Image 1 (cartoon, rainbow, N blue to C red):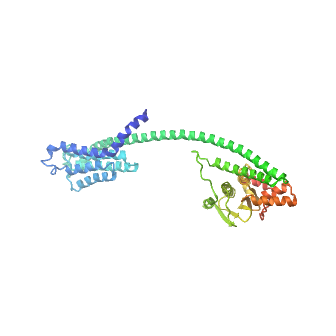
Image 2: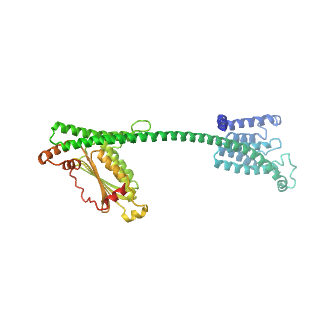
Image 3: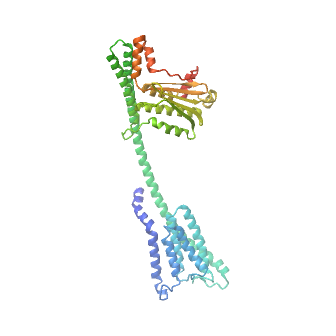
Length: 466
């Protein structure tokens, strides 16, 4: 109910806030001209109250747009009268001073808080000066309300000053109260609208959260089903191919095609599931070209990364590029998490082999310091298993473990399977190798990671890195 009332008054208040001061100035000027028409001495130009009326009218008119200018008109009137440049107030038009308080009401309604304090203080001082101008024998000489000051200004101000000052402050306070009430009323309306907007946004957020949770659950279930089924297909096809070396070449080629298609479909399905936005559109997936921007972002006050590259880059599939990006991202995140800011990280891309070999080495915190920093003991992380899964889905492999004062991660992503398949067939025909030997040659091409050793505590360190 209250919200509807505020909403209904809002257009009227906005209109009054914008044009109210100008309309009030016109009314103020018109009423004074009509009231004093018979006492102007035949002409408005010869009337002693013309300049005070003009200045107070301008003070009211500019109160909403230029509060400081409005206060300046009031100050100009008082300064002109103190210097005898303008005539003082008389008994028939001293109330023109009240225009300053009308302007004060508009300023307190429309101006910022800081200007409100300035306007209030200025009007208090102006009221005191008005009292002096109205009571002093040099200016208003009592403006017809008080007896002449035969004993001087001191006794006049002492006897009647506080009464007139209190009256002016009472009038100013009434105008200020109206302005403040209007300002508070509009602020209350703004708060009501903000509350309604917040409640509406909260409801929409709750709905979006429910939808996103359901979408995530479906995507996870779908991914698990596809991952299991396609992984079984790929494993069965590879196993059959390795165990049936005496089959015709066409059969082996068909089995290899089945395995490669299953792995490719698994990577693409994971990419599509991870890339679906709330609106159902597919978001752009990270590629190798996005790695420099990632490195630059991590270098900005966080890590000291030294990227190097050897060999000629080869085009990878979309799923493989995304896997490489995510693995690099996880390695840099782990380096920052476990090594802290300023950790040295060496990142090397080797394109010279049958596939992309990625070496990442980062400095690690000594075991004693890391254990003392985490009193709960080592935790099994999910970073390394996730990286291994991405590398495996991309057709490659990943190893990780401590090497002295560094933690090293080595990743291999193959370019393709044609050359590997030819090598397998040659090895099988000449040596009659076993399944373990042949699969080892395909899955892990000859890569020498110099200095990579796996000490006895490598397993625990690798778990902690996740």
